[in-house]
Length: 286
Image (tube, rainbow, N blue to C red; front, side, top):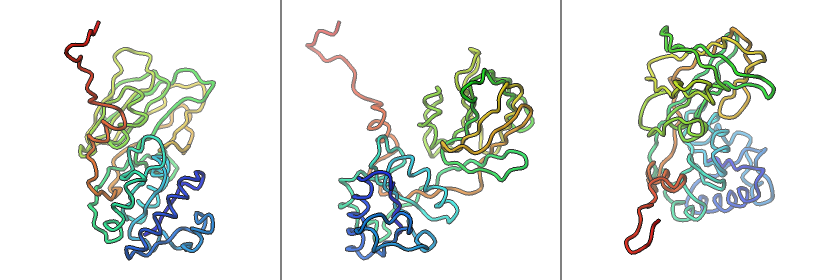
C-alpha cells in the first residue's frame, strides 16, 4: 500500500504516520514515495518505486490531494482511497477518526472498487489532458467576454458569450460546475456536463451529453488568450479560432470504497442537502 499525504499540511503527515503504523500492524506492506516521506516517522517507509509497486494508493488530504494523486492512479490502473484532512472531502472515503476502525479491512484488501468516468481533453498539436472533475475554458484577468461556438459531434448547439465554459464529469458535478449553476449528478450516471460560466444570455443553460459523444468548443472571439485548466491545473492557452475536443476516456479511475456512506449521505453531510427545514409545531414561524 502506497501512502500519499499532502506534505504541505502537518495534520496530513501526522495522520500518514498513524495510518502507516495501523496498516503495518494488520499485515500490510506500507511504502511512501521518497519525496513525500517527510520526517523521521515516515522516512522508514520511503521507496522510490512506491507507486509502481503498490496495489492501493491511500491519499491523505482533501479533494485537491485526491485530484493530484488521481493522475498517478489512472496511469497505473490501481485503486485509491482517501482519508479526509481537508474541508469538503467529496472524493475521500474516510474521516480521520474512522481509520482505526477500517485499517484491517484496508490492509486485507476487503474493499469494493468504484469506477469513475475520466475526461480526455485535446487541443490540436498537444498531448491529451486527462481529468477526473472538469476541463475549464476561462478568460484571463483582463479579458472581456469570450464567444464560444459549441458542437456535440457535428451538431451545432449554439454560441455562448460568457466568462468561460466547462465540461465536467458526474464526479465533478459537485465542484466548479455546481458553483456555476450546473446540476448535481449521481456518479453512477454516465454523462458529460456542459456548463456555461456567467453567460451573457438568459437562454444559456447547462446541457447534459451522453458519453458516446464528443464535445467541441471553438473560441469564436476573444481579445485575449483563453486559459484551459484541467482539475484546477493550468494545461494550455487557446487563441481565437482554436478548438478544444472533450470526450469520455476509455480509461476509468478506480476508487476503493468501504461502504461507510452513500453518495447521498455525502451530499447531506457536505452540502447540508436535505436538512429538515420544516417549521415545528408550537413555534411561531413568522
